[in-house]
Image (cartoon, rainbow, N blue to C red; front, top):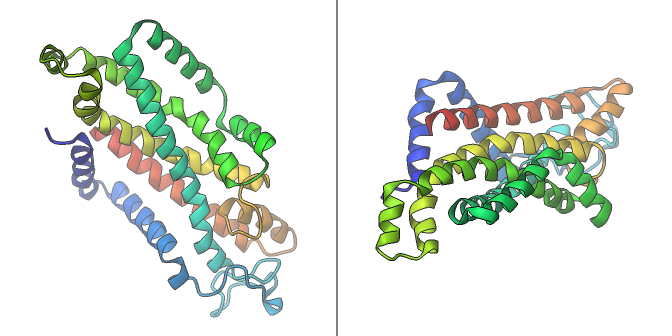
Length: 279
């Protein structure tokens, strides 16, 4: 049986050349990822190195996006800032997809009171905004990337689980599952070897769609000063510090970070929508 993940990715690759918007989104996302991975090579300066002669500096040939309030190169901080800005949401979605898929398949397979309990818990979690969970986690564990990621993971688990559960219920009643059950195969084997591969396109599409929202949530928490902590470069923090710089006459930092967040979220959402339509 061909894995559904391969099928989903193949469908996306075939769709992208036919869709100029999806092609542009893929190019933007690839550029951001490559810049993130090659940050030590492509960043022109140390992101934490101050330059008193470049304080609130405007764009120059030596500093393409100028300097921030401490004279640090904005372009370098923008490149390095992509790491926590994207790593946190990817971690959140990866863990929530694993947990949500496990809960969904368990509920669909067992049915009865197990399905009822899991469904009610997911409904309660779904009703609470992700930022609330992140703030609760920060209140208990303190500010930082990992506490925020933990809170958002709890919040995003039902985003995947609710959709996957519905698909798993449909798959659960198909003939190939009954045939495997009649052959005496264990429930775990049927779920892992048969159900899961057929659910992977839905899982991937839902996870990619949720990734853009996770980027926004994490950036918002960092903007409030509760996520990534200074002096670590982060796009949400750069928007916050850039607003202070804008009040002093130089808005480049805030604009650059805001545009970077918007481009990343739009690119992810476009690709997620394409995967959702082609699954």
